[in-house]
Length: 166
Image 1 (cartoon, helix red, strand yellow):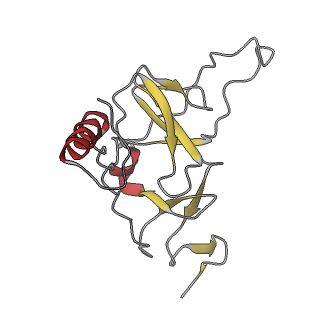
Image 2 (cartoon, rainbow, N blue to C red):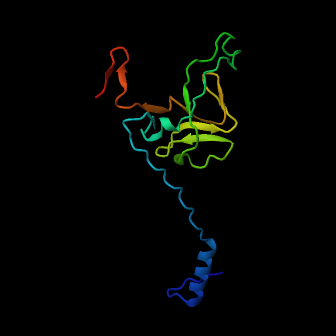
Image 3 (cartoon, rainbow, N blue to C red):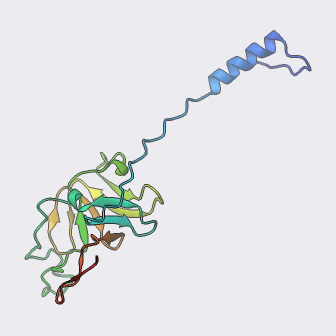
């Protein structure tokens, strides 16, 4: 359709402009639902994004029971065959997906903080190996270096003296 430019709009120009606008307009995609913010609970262990301190999950969201530290090592060539795993887990594994993760139906992917979009972990439905050597399947893995562990306010400062924060 050809739209003639005139100083006064004509019925022909209005109809042509309306048809052009309706053929090129796109419907906006709805925004994903906002994840409900988790409030700070001083009585539970919570995990927050290291960059923006947004609380991502709690102790209750972790796998239950937690995986056992492996007594074998799948990377024995890398360590000279003498090391039997790290014996310390450098990651936590979640039991199920949370609202802020969005759609994690793909085979694998990255987990980003809902506030600052910083990478905080990943998921693999085929499983992932923990730093201790254990395979966890399926794996929603969050390395402890990417999150801050926020312990309860009644957490003991020193196991020897038994002092606590009031």
